[in-house]
Length: 256
Ligand code: PEP
Image 1 (cartoon, helix red, strand yellow):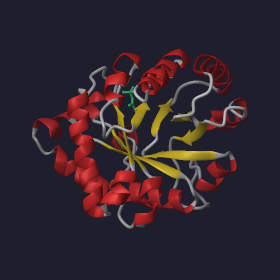
Image 2 (tube, helix red, strand yellow):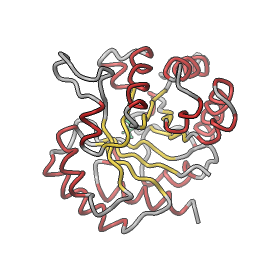
Image 3 (cartoon, helix red, strand yellow):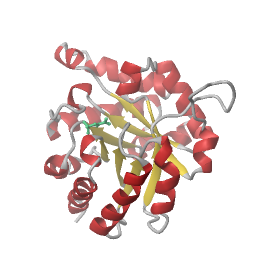
Image 4 (cartoon, protein in one colour):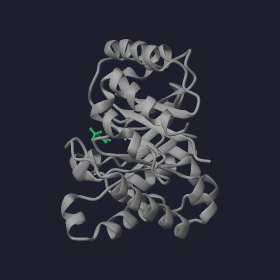
């Protein structure tokens, strides 16, 4: 069975001081969470604070929003896998559409980052997704297949399930426009079939595929009920501890 995974992508929001009170509020609301994996992904500057604030809540895992593929060196402004590991980071977002669109991240760079993360025992949350134009042109399956194939090229089959694939249709990110559960499920099933083709069915069945794109407390439950949707990568609605806690509770409800 794949354990559902909910990740809060704070993007460039919240200071380390705000992060501390967020965790306090969040923990008060959710109590203990056993059946869903929770990942909080703040800015780099808040990672140490979060590590400390969530110290008594082992079900909270820490994530980072990016890393560089090199181990160290003259790469001003970049952060390495070793640095993240030293702060107890477990997950790292790779290839978010904002990084692809605004910072020129290519499939080749995504691939290098995925390998670097896995070699450092970090779990990549590798994002893929189509634009509205690609969806309307009917070419989105081709686009997604290419992103998956390129991003995961060379990953040993036995390591595939350490990767979380995040399906984030670009037209649904931060727009308030969510894919319907049926639309998302169709793509998730397609992505799993691509993984089976590129690796094998067992590995594909073990790998979690998250949905991301305007997930909020009101739509989380119906999305999380779909058989191939193994969690969510949440942007805007994760910035408020109450609202992220409601998404956790909605997801727990689907397991009862
Ligand atoms: C994201 O950026 O990963 C995301 C899904 O954002 P939002 O939930 O705000 O659409």
